Structures are given as C-alpha cells and as structure tokens.
Amino acid sequence: MARGFDKAAFATVIACVCLAQRATAQTVSINAPDTSKTRIQVGPVMLNPAVDLSNLGIDTNVFNQPAGQEQEDFTFTLSPRSDVWMKVGPTWLSGNIREDLVWYQTFDTERSANTSATINWIVPLNRLRFSVGTGYLWARERPSYEIDARVPRVEAQVTGAMELRAFSRTYFGVQASRRRVDYQDDASLLDTALQVALNRVSTNLAVSARHELTPLTSISFDVGRLRDEFDISALRDSDSTTAGVQVTFDPSAIIRGSARIGYRDFEPTDVSLRSYRGPTVAVDLSYVLLGSTKLSLQVNRDVQYSFDVNQPYYLQNGIASTIQQQIFGPVDAVGGFGFYNLSYRDRAGAVTLYPDRVDEYRSFNVGVGYHMSPDLRVGVRLEKQWRNTEVAPRQFEGLRFGLAVSYGT
Image (cartoon, rainbow, N blue to C red):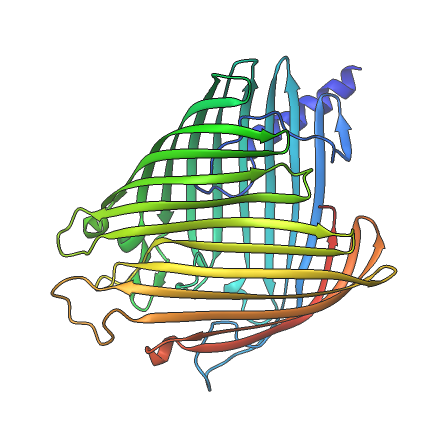
C-alpha cells in the first residue's frame, strides 16, 4: 500500500508541475471529467496515455519558400501525451501533458521539443460549481498561418469559472482568464522581432447563461469584455466587446463538440487602426455515421494580430473538414481539406504595396490506414499545402508524405 501510494503521489506531483494540454484561451470545464477512457490507474491517479508518430517521411519545402528556392528533408514528429485525473473528496484534478518531438535529418535548426500542459481543479457541487486552471506552453513552431518560421515562444494562462444552478436545468455563470504570450529574443520574421511586435497580455471577463436541452446537449449565451495589451507595440492595444450563442454536445453524444456564433466589437486604442464590428464563428464538430464513417468540421472567423506594423491585424476566415471511411475489415481511407483567408487591415497613413490584401492558405490530404488493434493504427499520408498572395516572396507550395502511427485516443 505504501509503495502504491508513493507512486500515486509522484504521478500527481508530475501532473501538477507539468500541467496539461496547450495553453489556449478556452473556457475551463466545470463538469466532472469523463474518466471512462482510463487505461492505467496508480492509486487514486487515472491516466489515459496515447502517442502519435506523424510525418515520418519527406517535407519538400521545409522553410515554405517560393518556387525555385524549396529545400527538402527527412522528418518525423513523435507526440506522447496523457490525460490525468484524480478525485480528491468531492472535487477533481484534471489535466493533460503533451510533448511534440520534431526532428529533421539535415536542417537541425528546425528540430524542437514542444511542451504543453494544463491542470484544472474542478468543484462540481450540487447548486454551485466552480473551477480554476492554469496552462503552460513552450514551443518552437509556426504559431499561425501567417508566420512561416518555427519561432520559440512561451504562453502562460490562468482561468477561472463559476456557475450557479438557478433552475433544474438552467445555470448562470461568470468566467475570467489571463493569458500571456512571450516570443523569445531570437524569434524573428522578415527582419521583424516578434517579441517587439506580438508580446502581449490578454484578459477576458464574461458572464453567461446555460440551459441543458437534454442530458447530452446544452445551449449557452455569453457577453464578455476582452483587452489586449502589448509590451512594446502599443499600436496594437485593443478592447473588444463580445457576445455569442453556443451549442455544446457531450463527448458520448452522436454529434460531439461545440458550435459558437458570435459578434465582436473590436476597437483598437490607436485611432490609426480601423475597428472591426461583425460576426465571429468557432465550430469544432464530429459525427460518426453507422459506426464506419467519421466526419469532422472546423469553422472559424475572428480577428488575429499580424507582425506587420503597416497591417497590424487581419480577419481570419477558415473551414476545414476530414472524412474517415472504413473500407473493409481493419482498412480505412482518410481525406481532408483546409481553406483559410487572411484579410489584412491597413493602418491609416501607412504606405503599403498591397492595400487591404487577402492571402489564401490551402491544404489537401489523403491517406489509408490499417487498424492493428482498436487502439493502434498504422497508415500512410500525403498532404499538399500552398499560399496564394500578392507578396511574391511569401508564396509557397509544399508537399509532405510519409508514415503515421497512432496509439490511443
């Protein structure tokens, strides 16, 4: 018993120190976690480990360079991760740990070990429930569709949420978060120091009302206030008022995920920047048809910050979808696409070669896989990516093809 408890305590300390998942500005869960996928239990600690080996093959355009300047290399990415849960009285500690080990054979400058982690303390009481969480990310990767360089950055976030059950299936709540983004000294793109342009703190406060339509489906309404403050580039400081309606489906439902349609009043503090008042969208849904066809859909529309001082932000519109079809027995086929438009907004008085330009980012992928067991899949995958833009040096086209192995979910 003592030795088992020591192992559990050690695992708990590791989980708390490492936290879990990538630090993103997402709402902290205030519901008890679903532990049905537990594969390993050490004392009170439950684990759901998984690992992916992806992109084991050739990248024909390592640096996303225009035609005639492409350089290829052999590469792979190994991604071990695990969900972590522990029940503490009536409360829960819930977290996730992930490591992405990226390796290139020739271009060792592109190698990296990206670490992400989060942890939430969830208190699901009868009428009142609340949670607090924190997240951490250290990565050397492409942070957006705009930035092609694999640049080092650190993100840290704290979040909190509280919800009160007013009626049998209706809840009122409040949520708050603070997220800091720090690009490191050597992070640059096109002679622009990204820490000068993009280091910032984002704070958000929102109130919400949520109604459970069914045990597996809920609808919520929220209104919030978001402030972005930049360390050096005060030109990009802004205040936003947001509102939206969201439908959320339980992971055990036929349709899984969430879909949110909202409105954002984005108001830069610098009068030389135009405001944005319009719709926002955040959709992440999946659906399994007859147990053999899996469909997924992601849609987004929102404001994103640019490193370009003359076009300090853009409106990103995107849609991506994947279909996975069981062909026969353990063999399946996968296909998908992603379409993204980056609509830049000019700063008043700035001289730009391409006013209000729109960059297009496109990707397609196909693959086949073989399920060696319910948890283990081996496959081959081919993906093509390219960017269309008026800025000739920013155009590129690349192809990745190789082996992929995944264990767990």
